[in-house]
Length: 145
Length: 436
Image 1 (cartoon, rainbow over the protein chains, first blue to last red):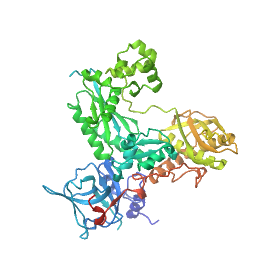
Image 2: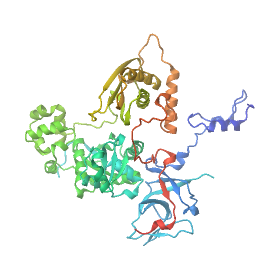
Image 3: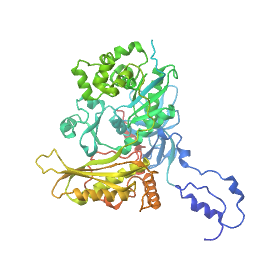
Image 4: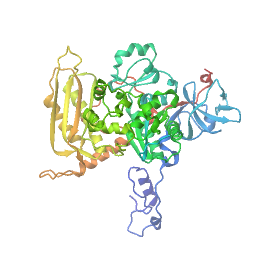
C-alpha cells in the first residue's frame, strides 16, 4: 500500500461495523502523530438517528405510488414509531378496510382526512362510517437512490 | 378502606391471547375474527382468540379434532412463529422496564412488577396508564392486576380478564373486599396450586380461595407442604414470594421436536440431532455455560399402535465440559449411532445437555489444554448468526435439505426480524378505499 494516506485509512475501517475500534486519523507511519488523535469522537450509528424508541419502532415496506409527492416511493422502507401521538400533517400508517395504509393525516377543528400525496388519488374523509385507527406515525423513509 | 400492611404493591402484566395478538398486529383484517395458533409441527391449538374460546375449542386441543369446526366458522389458522413472538415479547418487556425499575419477566407473555406502597396515589389510574402505554407502543393488548402479594396480583389479573366491567385492569388494595373476592375464586385457579393439590382440597370440601385461607395452618402444611402454606399466606395478603429479577440457574438445556413425517434413515436422524445440538449449544453459550453430559433420545410414534415401536436413549459424559458446537455434535452423533435401529418409523428425536458449569470454570486437565481458537470460532459464528439471521453459518452435519423438518404450513412472515419479510403498507389506488 502507498504510505500514509489518511483518507484510505478511513475507508478501510468504516465498513467494519463489528469491530468497535476508534478511528485514528493518522496513517501508519513512523513520523509525528496526528494532532487530531487527541480529539477522537465516537462513531455515528444510524440507528440512533432513525430510531428514537426501539421498543415502539417497526419497519414496514411500501407497496404503491400514492405517496410519491411526500418522497415515499414504491418499495421504500418506512420507520414507524407507535409511541408518537399522531398530529395533523404527519405521515401515518392507518388501518383502512382492514389494511395497513400509508397516508398523510390532516386534522381540522371538525374534520379529519387521510390524503394521498399524488394528484391522481382523492382524499379519504373520516367520519362515523369510516372509523379511523392510526397504527403508527412514520418518521423516516429509506429508499435506494 | 383498610389497606394491607405489606410495604409493597405487586403487579402482573399479562398479554391477552399473546400469540394471536402478535399475528393480528400485522393483519388488522383479523380484528374480531376467530384466530388460532398451532404448536410446533401443527399438532395442537396453543393460542385462541376470544371468538374461538366461545366456540368451545379448548387450550391444547389436537388440531385435527377441530378441523371441521375451524372450517365451518372460517377460523384463520397460523403455525407458531416464535421469532415473531420472541421479538414482540422483548418489546413488551422493554416498555415495562422503561417505566418500572423492578420487572420480573415471568414467561413469554407475563411480567411481574413491584413498587413501594404509596408510590402511586391512584392505582386504578396507574394500571390504566401502564396498559395503554404497552398497547400503544407495542400494539399488544394486556391485562393488569395489582395486589399486595404476587399471588393476589395474579388473581387480580384473572379478575381483570374475566369481568367485563374492569376494562382489563383490576386492583386489590382493600382488605375489606378480600374475602368477597376470594369467595369467587376456585382453588384450581390459584397460582401455585397444581391440579393434584386442587383435587385433594376439593375432596375435603375446600373449594374456594376463601375457604382455603380460613383453614388452619398446620392442616394446610400437611395437605399442601410448606410451599402451599406460603401460597395461602400470600392469599391472606402477607408477601412471601419476592420478585426474581435474574432467572433461576438452569440445570439442563434441551431441544426436541417431532418430525413433519416419519423418518427412517440414520442420515436424516443425524441431521435432526445435529440441528438440535446446534440450537442447544447456542443457548448454552448465550447463557455463559458449558455442558459435560449429553443425552440423546429417539422414539417412534406411540399413538400408532399398529406400527413397531422403539424408543431408546444414551447418555455420554464428556471428558471435558464444552460449549463448542462441533464437539457436542460429535458426542451426540456417537450416541445416536449406538441407539439407532433400522426398520422403524421414527417420529421424534431430542438432545439434553446437563452437568452445566459457568464457562470460566476450568477443570484442570492433564492432557488437553482448552483451545482458545475454538472459543473465538464460536463467538464469531454466534455474531454472524445474530447479525445475518439464524442458520447463516452452521455445521455441515445439520444438512441442507432437511426433509425431516417439522411441518409448519401456515406460518406468517418473520415481520420484525427479516428485511425480506417486512409488513406491507399500501400506498394504493382509491378503489380499495370504498367505504365498507
